[in-house]
Image 1 (cartoon, rainbow, N blue to C red):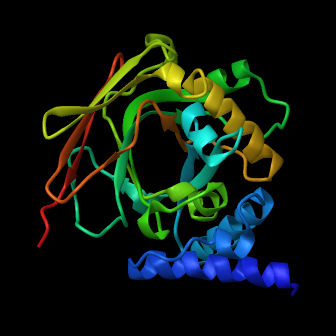
Image 2 (cartoon, one colour):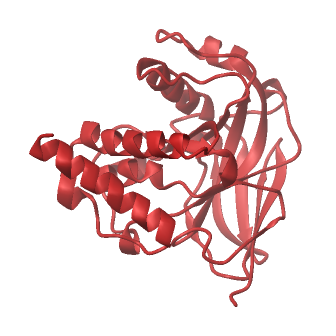
Amino acid sequence: MTSSDDKIEQAAASIRQAYETGEACAPVRELIGETDLDAAYAVQEINTKHWLDAGRRPVGRKIGLTSKVVQTQLGVDQPDYGMLYADMDVGDGEEVAHGRVIQPRVEAEVVFVMGDDLDEEQLTTADVMNAIDYAVAGIEIVGSRVADWNIRITDTIADNASSGLFVLGQEPKLISEFDMRLCGMVMERKGEPVSVGAGAACLGSPINAALWLARGMAKVGRPLMRGDIVLSGALGPMVPVSPGDVVEARINGLGSVRAVFAPEG
């Protein structure tokens, strides 16, 4: 094992320990650098294999960094992705126990559920649209295993794209039944608006994000498959949450979805 490989293994172990103990770790960029995306995805892949071996069931992917503003803040020109597992799924309105996600924040997204496999690398927008079974409104509960959200691009990639939990709405729609680019979104916390946006904030359209993901997943040998859930990226700013908060997101054409956080204690 080379020194570089050793640091990648150390970074993966640090992320896993934070996940298992609930205690955030130091930024892993201190081990793998701030700009080496290949090293960051290698860390993610080590932990993906670990969790698959441990019996976690993969159910899809999440796309992060779909906002140009956030990309600029982190000094990158592309999104990132992470794995979704069945144990991340939370029912609409189901209470999320305190401490289940480290440093939780929420964002509203258009979520796609795939109806066909996308295992060709040379995919088109039409291929992706034809492969989507339906869409629903979703709330992603993101969390960082890195202390104080002190992250750069390699930290979040290594940390499975800062994934936590996800909540799916219960009004499935065909993608022809709503305007993916112009659909408006408002997210409220305890009844007060805290985030607004639209489909265009997500790489110009959630379909653009899904196409980017599908091509990337086919390239690395983990293609999107029938039944996979795709969290396509935030439609507005990410918002921190606290114990006792109730968050509701509404997306034009897709209805609403709620995330409920248990009181502390």
